Image 1 (spheres, rainbow, N blue to C red):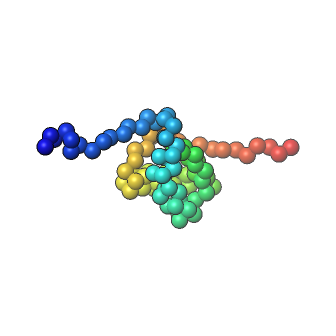
Image 2: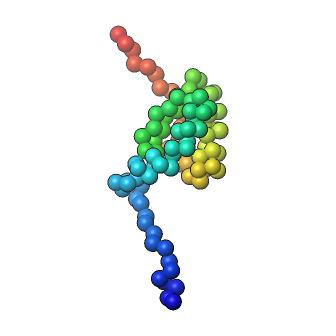
Image 3: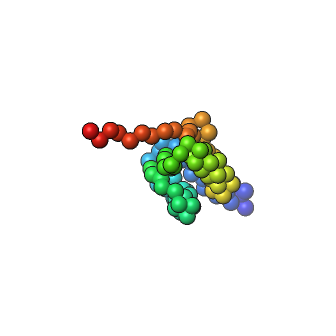
Length: 94
């Protein structure tokens, strides 16, 4: 039997492809549950996420702890150039 016939088919997805948000939602579902379990408030669309924290120190600590979870438990790579701790100010309601 030819060895080529035994090879499994392979599908590649571009990061901006139409299936990308669906794949991200499937892969990051466990992260959503982990963040809820840890008591974090967050918003995520596909692979973009905002985790809300009360202070900059809390945000840094959360980032420090969640990156290893993503990389070691979910086997996903975090883009550290795009991953930041930032201050989000509420708009003045006047």
